Image (cartoon, rainbow, N blue to C red):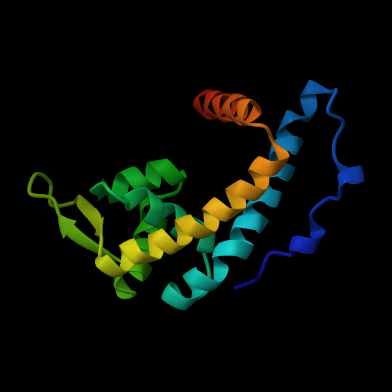
Length: 161
């Protein structure tokens, strides 16, 4: 599997003009890539050790989504905006690593739900700790009230998309 070239991310002087609202998509993309790089750096070792290489960001989202709630596989596909077969392959990797359990639904044989195992829960604790440290670094750069505004704006954009 080809690795993403993180060094290809734009530097500050290469970014789009903030004063032009038509640049919202490129600014979001640049911010997303930078954020994913940071998340990848702090979680990669934990996930690679547990599951092996590939799809680390998606696996991270799946594990964190399943934490504390029984989750239907089809809902994960909707949440991550990917197809059911793609999610099924990712979930299979997590199952094979002993991090999640899949159980069939008594209502619909085509549907299955996921729960974390003890090992999966422990890994999510470690991942959340690493992400918490990253959030603290970002929090040092962005004031709390601006975070709230950012999160609400991103939520509104997600609804509009």
